[in-house]
Image (tube, rainbow, N blue to C red; front, top):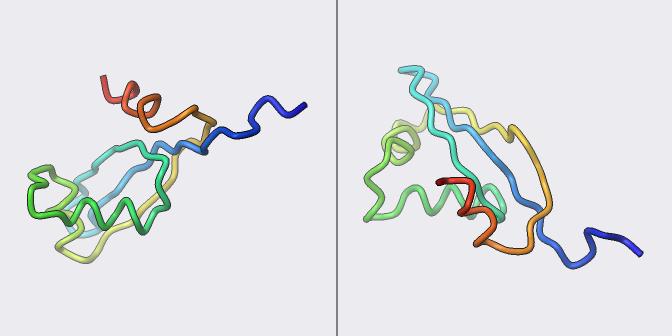
Length: 78
C-alpha cells in the first residue's frame, strides 16, 4: 500500500525579481503556470504581482511534499 496514494503534491516556491532582487515565497498544490496566473490577479496586492509584472523573474521550487488538500498548504502560511 502506498501511503501517499490519493494525496496531492504541495510545493513551497520562491519568485525572485532579476531586476531588484525582491523575493516572494509561497505555497501551493497547483501547477506552476496556474499559480503564477493567480499572482497576476486584479486583487493581488502582494509583491508577487509587482515582480511578475516586471517580466524578469525566476521561479524556483524549494520543497515538495504530499498533502491531503489545499487547506493543508494554507496551514504553512500561518
